Length: 277
Ligand code: AMP
Ligand code: ZN
Ligand code: FE
Ligand code: FE
Image (cartoon, rainbow, N blue to C red; front, side, top):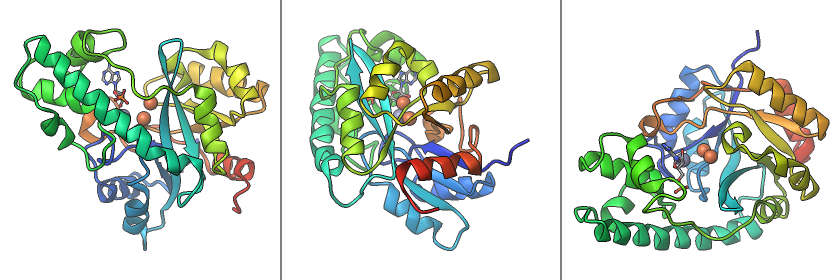
């Protein structure tokens, strides 16, 4: 059917993937992709290195980010694309977001110590990322490598999932605020993996706040689910995006190019963002 054109949700080792920007570019080229977007959690540090690595290859690297927000105690991820990388409210806020991730991780490690898991230090967790966007997947990996739990899944189940013993929220930001940060920086805002988040009832209000799209193409879900979100996007006059959410060896359930969108959908995103084709 459609060509494997654009994977617009890829992480690097600047957040919680094991892949460097160069690894990402090489894997994307091997997968036959023409366009990718680096969408790290709360950092843009991987974007320019990926563009540098892609120079000379027929691969476009769109600026992206995955912002965390919270509504009613539930994590809601908002993707941003085509925002201003040099200045504006979004890049201005990233330092605060990362500082609160560092503080939160120190609390998580202290809580683990309290629970008797004493052989993990904050410094060891921080070493697993190239920026300050330290997160739960880093800690989960250490819990596995130190044999506290047998698997990443168990690390989340026992300690790290929302509501579990070692869970702490990050900075307090609503999805509305995350959308505004992206829009006020010239970007378009997309609700990430709505089929995982399962808060569809929020979509009309988020559209009112400026939401531009839904990430309907996502790995490991049926065409029925994809089509459901395509129809929901059409109903609200939103664009449709998609990507693999690849994390290198950090997530075995997906890989670069596993989910992708067509050139027509990328053109629609660019039109919505006011970017020349
Ligand atoms: P954080 O941004 O620090 O809250 O961590 C979010 C990261 O944890 C994302 O990369 C998720 O993919 C990962 N994550 C969340 N829940 C789970 C889970 N049950 N199993 C594996 N990874 C998870
Ligand atoms: Zn992640
Ligand atoms: Fe996410
Ligand atoms: Fe992601």
